[in-house]
Image (tube, rainbow, N blue to C red; front, top):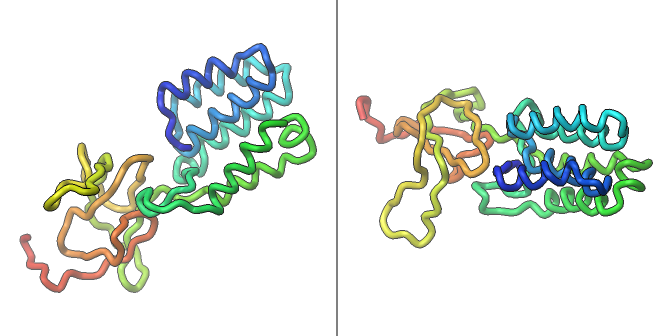
Length: 212
């Protein structure tokens, strides 16, 4: 979900032109799910081509429009995943919502393409903002520099290994893509949580000295 690898999107792109219409329908919706909220240009271009290819098939065209909406979910500010807390915890409610939609795709003609299109609303329980916003103890926005990079698995490593690699420094609020992690780039503030995602409350560091 929300992780459009080249291998996965290539396979789904081929299947979306399959002679079996049910296979093509599921592949089209799967393209939207794997690229949900990423604004992925490759998938968006594929879906635009499919809208022209299936212009005489209203059912497939409906799924193409749904997939396009998923790709640009919240203009790229919302992701679709059952994981949270730096991918350390799994939300069973979110997972159930995703499975409800996937299970209904086994008989799409009598579910999503029939009288039960509202099944797609189950995806909302798995949607969450993929942004990092920092606020002070009074709840006011507090822009601070943060380093955003690819997350590194440091479980079992001795000492204080780096938790991110290939990072760039930005000022909050910032977007966190799948597989990315953020850390504060200043010692002036201390986060009141160990996971920097969503809305994070910062407090002033009593030991901070100007110029550090």
